[in-house]
Amino acid sequence: MPAGLGPRRARGTDPVRRSCCTNLVGVDAADISADLEHVLHTADQIDARGTELAALIDADYAGRRPVLVGVLNGAMIVMSDLCRAMHCHVEVDWMAVSSYGSGTRSSGVVRILKDLTVDVAGRDVLIVEDIIDTGLTLSYLVHNIATRGAASVRVVTMFRKPEALNAPAEADEIPDEFVVGYGLDYAGRYRNLRDLATLAPHVYR
Ligand code: IMP
Image 1 (cartoon, rainbow, N blue to C red):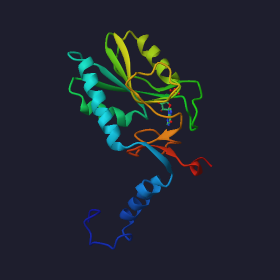
Image 2 (image 1 turned 180 degrees about the horizontal axis):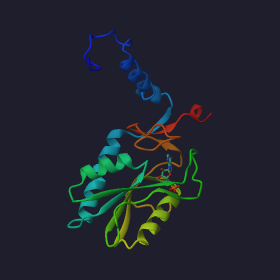
Image 3 (image 1 turned 135 degrees about the vertical axis):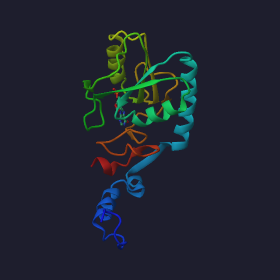
Image 4 (image 1 turned 90 degrees about the horizontal axis):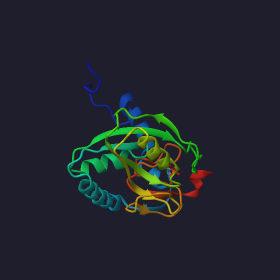
């Protein structure tokens, strides 16, 4: 008999269901919120801001077909929200770079871990970023994409920290603190939080 079609078992005794439940313990909302200190932006605030940014981008690129380049992994959520809120034609591509490792400070060295698949020569490129801290990652990416002959290279980011270099004016400035959620991680975790929040000190111990 195919899995799942047998007689109903009591919750927790079915081996398949039990292993699913074990996996889900790690993403339980109550678990995650115990690790948070302050919510800086709620999901609703972020959503409203995303809609405004999408309208600005639509107006700026009217009649053109920009290539949106998301910076993995952090920009996965802002990219999916932004591009669905836009009405102009877009293409989507991704780059993955590393500048942080598993710590909370930029290492200062940017390495390309995954490159573009679209040829951006002659194209209008809009880099989609989650947050700008020092600005090092974006400076590197803007320069790198410009040298491939892109017609224009611009940046949209949801958040920026106070010291960020060359950050777009529209980005929401947040305090100079390490934040998680809305795609941003600490050591690979917390990307699935809908709010943007700081972490409680016990997480770093
Ligand atoms: P920058 O090169 O210092 O501007 O760092 C940019 C990248 O570092 C972003 O794309 C994020 O992935 C990551 N980053 C910067 N600040 C934070 C933070 O507060 N939390 C999580 N990731 C961050």
